[in-house]
Length: 246
Image (cartoon, rainbow, N blue to C red; front, top):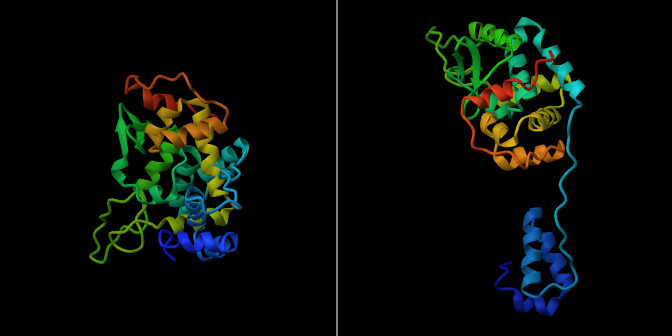
């Protein structure tokens, strides 16, 4: 049914047709848009459109986040790739789709410090994780192609030549350990945004300013007075200083 062609019929049929038409629209956002259009066209006086309510936030406790980080730091050697991916999630709130597609060029050395590029500037890594990441780089799995040449630009090479690990394979392994992946990402982002200005978090981790600010508000640290103009060299150090408890 075309909405613009149905105004006359809607006026005649009233609320019952509005309800039937809404049921025929599969996506809930389209149902909302349909009723909003009908209300604006003065065809709907019986159905009230309320504001969308955000879903409850899923999060780990800070203790759980740090406990999982410690657990992944000392796991078995044959799980090293997945443990590195898990720590990137737990410490830096990186989506698994982004983690899976990281290239080795994201890992750099600056003044003797190991850093990783996740946003606009490389972030210094805690030494324990830096050592772990270097072990992974030296022993990455799935490097041998059909021709026997160890070449891959990916930080997490996949089974198929030239491909990286899929986000789903990382998801499956981390979930099998019992890690709440969405909770881990939310807690990491909220913890960072509570201690570091959200615009800085957004720039260094590759998030939008709105997302970083939203998580800062959840963490009850709006940072409203933060001035975004700062020296670029100050940015990575601010985030690197965030956690050194493990």
